[in-house]
Length: 86
Picture 1 (tube, rainbow, N blue to C red):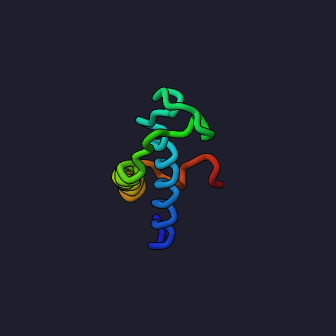
Picture 2: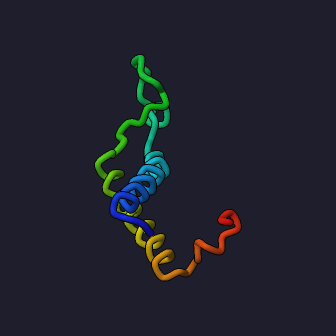
Picture 3: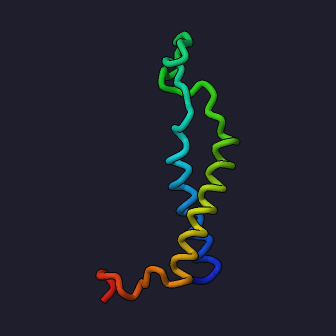
């Protein structure tokens, strides 16, 4: 699948993609919570729970990366047979 730098780059790409998928989950905006508008954006989250989301992102990304690595390592999908590769 590549050298260690390639593997780290793939993992970080997966991590950032998963982070942006997980960030909106479980958040409540100031408007939804019924908090007064004191000059802040009404769409701002009340408690974003970033620490929990970073941990969740890390384990979900690790699982996705492991599945991708297993698929490529055991040649469940052969990259040489993909149509874009001539």
